[in-house]
Length: 144
Image 1 (cartoon, one colour):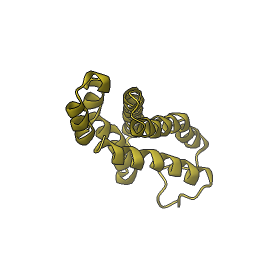
Image 2: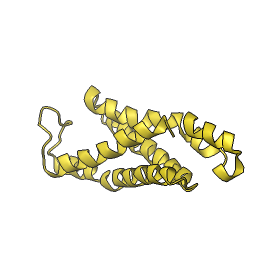
Image 3: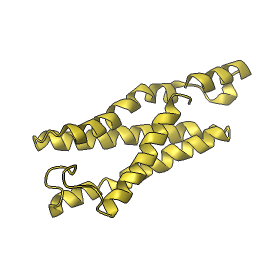
């Protein structure tokens, strides 16, 4: 969890901040994606809101559960990682089909798509803490 925690914090708090900024229309036009004010694009963007907030809820919950030494942190973290990958993939697929390449928006979405791939296997394949010796539990806390 040591390596995963900063990714969860950046991603989950980042999503919350993004949606606050979006709600209050704070994104400058120079940083907005193509056709940002088009009603269809507004709807497309807002269609990610439930997914992104679920990612934040599950990611932050997994950190809380890990801190409380509850084994349920794993499924919560796994859900967050898979949903994060899906969010990034869906946006990248859209921009690809639209033949719209904006390095600013692509970089954020590629981050969402790629970073979970480094953790999904570790989180899903590791044994539950109650199945490990105390030394293995300590090692797992340091290494993940």
